[in-house]
Length: 194
Image (cartoon, rainbow, N blue to C red; front, side, top):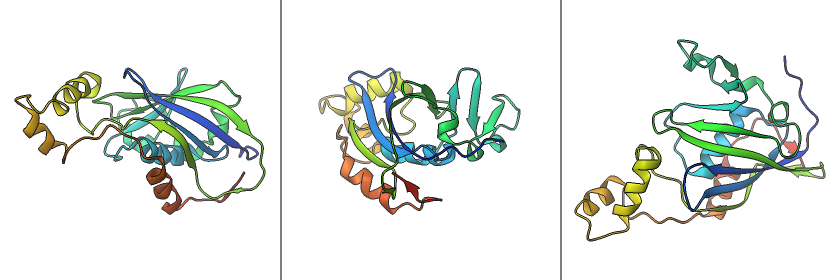
């Protein structure tokens, strides 16, 4: 059984792999946060809708929701029982966050900085980022490239249809303030110290 590590604040950089220019976020979270809550944070800061399965990967270990792995394909460690600090232990450590096994979105997660405890961190915060994440079910990296070629070309024969599918015009911008408002409104299991 994993022990609860002493609390500090982790600064993480999350980069969606395979996309240029990069789509990335920089966040601060308590080191004692469990991976199930890290998943919730990643969904909000990246802009995903939590419509698909996910897992965390590091070396030969995988963390996720064991009940979803009905055929024991992934040998998942329960993410709800694993603290982030038991996976990322030192600055420079990294892991992969995989979301939507069909589109196969891989996120490189780097522990950039460990910030000593000073005061209460009421909620995870996003301190930076660039670009909007792809729409759900766009077809992975290749589908996203085709989506961008079409959605920004009003003369393309599929433009109108794609705008309807995307729910309106696509703005490739990231709004950290909106993300932080959402994070502050979420209920977190524990108040962590910063």
